[in-house]
Image (cartoon, rainbow, N blue to C red; front, top):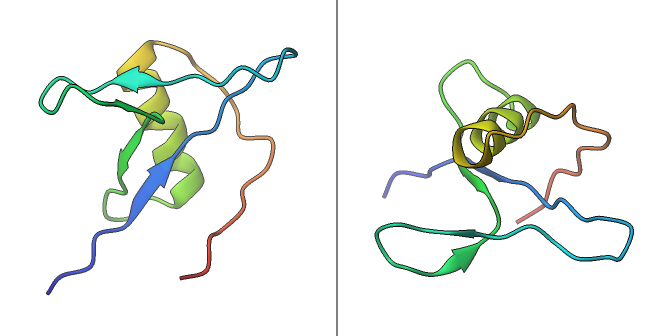
Length: 68
């Protein structure tokens, strides 16, 4: 089984509300994100995916790598 690398973005405001996006295919609400492309690190993928899904351009403030 192949392992896919993914990145998700947790974006919250001063009221501690979080940004979710509705996926077109499965119609569920999720954190913005997606697969990490070859040669891309997780932070770059997160910034790219957030822009692709919302039009928001951000710089990562902190990147926490989840241990599985």
